[in-house]
Amino acid sequence: MTTNDKQRITLFINPAIVKHVKAQAIVEELSLTNFIEKALINYLPKETIIKKVQI
Image (cartoon, rainbow, N blue to C red; front, side):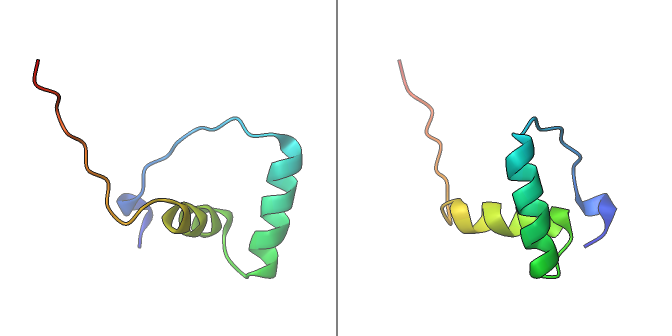
Protein backbone atom coordinates (compact mmCIF):
# COMPACT_ATOMS: atom_id res chain seq x y z
CA MET A 1 0.00 0.00 0.00
CA THR A 2 1.36 3.40 -0.91
CA THR A 3 0.87 6.71 0.86
CA ASN A 4 -1.58 7.56 -1.93
CA ASP A 5 -3.88 4.88 -0.47
CA LYS A 6 -3.89 6.47 2.96
CA GLN A 7 -5.46 9.48 4.64
CA ARG A 8 -3.58 11.64 7.12
CA ILE A 9 -5.33 12.24 10.45
CA THR A 10 -4.40 14.11 13.61
CA LEU A 11 -5.06 12.56 17.01
CA PHE A 12 -4.45 13.72 20.54
CA ILE A 13 -3.39 10.70 22.60
CA ASN A 14 -2.03 10.35 26.12
CA PRO A 15 1.80 10.42 25.88
CA ALA A 16 2.11 7.26 28.00
CA ILE A 17 -0.05 5.38 25.48
CA VAL A 18 2.02 6.75 22.58
CA LYS A 19 5.21 5.54 24.25
CA HIS A 20 3.69 2.12 24.82
CA VAL A 21 2.36 1.75 21.26
CA LYS A 22 5.66 2.87 19.71
CA ALA A 23 7.53 0.28 21.76
CA GLN A 24 5.08 -2.47 20.81
CA ALA A 25 5.30 -1.53 17.12
CA ILE A 26 9.08 -1.93 17.33
CA VAL A 27 8.71 -5.33 19.01
CA GLU A 28 6.35 -6.45 16.24
CA GLU A 29 8.64 -4.93 13.58
CA LEU A 30 5.83 -2.74 12.23
CA SER A 31 5.68 0.93 11.44
CA LEU A 32 3.54 2.96 13.79
CA THR A 33 1.02 3.44 10.97
CA ASN A 34 0.81 -0.29 10.24
CA PHE A 35 0.54 -1.12 13.94
CA ILE A 36 -2.35 1.32 14.44
CA GLU A 37 -4.10 0.06 11.29
CA LYS A 38 -3.75 -3.54 12.48
CA ALA A 39 -5.12 -2.63 15.93
CA LEU A 40 -8.11 -0.80 14.44
CA ILE A 41 -8.88 -3.62 12.00
CA ASN A 42 -8.82 -6.13 14.88
CA TYR A 43 -11.00 -3.86 17.05
CA LEU A 44 -13.66 -2.89 14.53
CA PRO A 45 -16.49 -5.22 13.50
CA LYS A 46 -16.15 -6.89 10.10
CA GLU A 47 -19.16 -4.97 8.83
CA THR A 48 -20.88 -1.77 9.92
CA ILE A 49 -24.47 -1.18 8.86
CA ILE A 50 -25.82 2.35 9.07
CA LYS A 51 -29.55 2.70 8.59
CA LYS A 52 -31.31 5.94 7.84
CA VAL A 53 -34.24 6.50 10.19
CA GLN A 54 -37.53 7.22 8.46
CA ILE A 55 -39.49 9.95 10.25
